[in-house]
Image 1: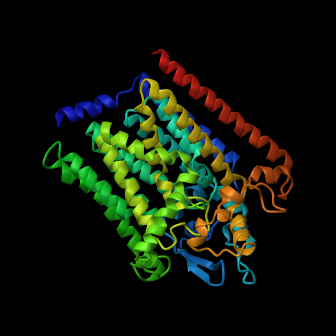
Image 2 (image 1 turned 135 degrees about the vertical axis):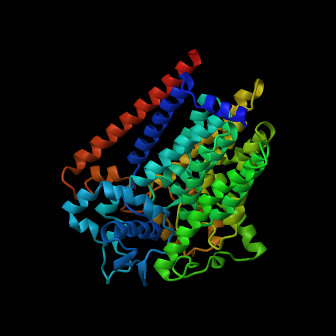
Image 3 (image 1 turned 180 degrees about the horizontal axis):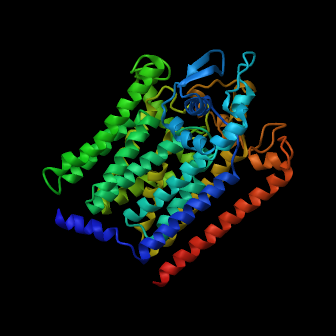
Length: 508
């Protein structure tokens, strides 16, 4: 025990290396955040996001979970949000910071409502959400920073850990989802923070990272309640790893994480009770069992679809994922603990979401449900590259960079166009319903048929619409041209500073 604590204290001492990592963390976060603001869509994309955001407004401005007027999207109005509360809670600090704006413009506090419109455009696009749409950019930039730190814990060289963070931030589906309104970016942040915490605790012997991991794990459950399955694996992993030190530590360490999980489940149950009068309700009354088809054929379809379907397959939307399996083998050979942790989380996620009726995530872009495991997939691929030596290093580096570059190109498919209109075209023009079979049709893939905006619609970037005069706003053209230049300047400056920091490290 004493030696582990000494090692933990030594690992936390400040020094040239840790200072450089801190500066690199800031620069990675700044570059990613500026990039996400540059590609911002500026509007909402799903009933999920609409409900979670409007629920946050109800909490802050009316101190209630209930909508007044009701949320009308489709045929049936809703009195409360049926989605887990994690993303709703995440909006609250932004709304508090912006509270004076909502006081000055009271119309922003109201929820748009028009009984004659099944899908009110004012719910889809409004100034209140535009002000708060920085949330997912912030969350995704934070996750990129955690990818860097987790890479350093895995023993990756500083430049490779930076590369992994930038590939995740710029060249994965996370970049597209930073502009959407789903809860997956928050789920990715909480899962990555949990993994980082347990890895750091395992390395240093300190319990403090486990406390943070427990908080992150609990918040992850409030964001995606099905994370309880991942939580069991992570807690079991911590218990088994802690058995190396003493007889008491396994129960204590596992208990810290289990406490976070139990508290989150309690909060979730209480909120459901307040909302629906039923603590076990899911999505406004449905049972969790309704998510699953319960057949081997349905599971096989889901697993194949999550991996290789043209419309949502991970291996197409994130080409670097092809290196995940050899990367996990590398971790298992050289860093056994991380290999089993990563492999378990990735495998359980695939099995869990492949078992869903709607394994493709409904109307969305790419592998929506697998977004939380992309940081682990990226780190596994980086571990594969890090193990290369001699003549294999150049070949592996070329493969890694090529797949990363392809990922950057693919991510722009989810940036240039609004996938909602592409999916509408698939259904209306081609007559393809939103079923599992459609996801395997090449024509249904945005990577094949969704590169250009629908006729009469501009590129789905807020600043482009502003500069083109499509959005009625004073000084729109000037603002739409100036702010992107500032953001581009920030990205270039951060990139240059990252290079300088890495070169300075080489001289030490």
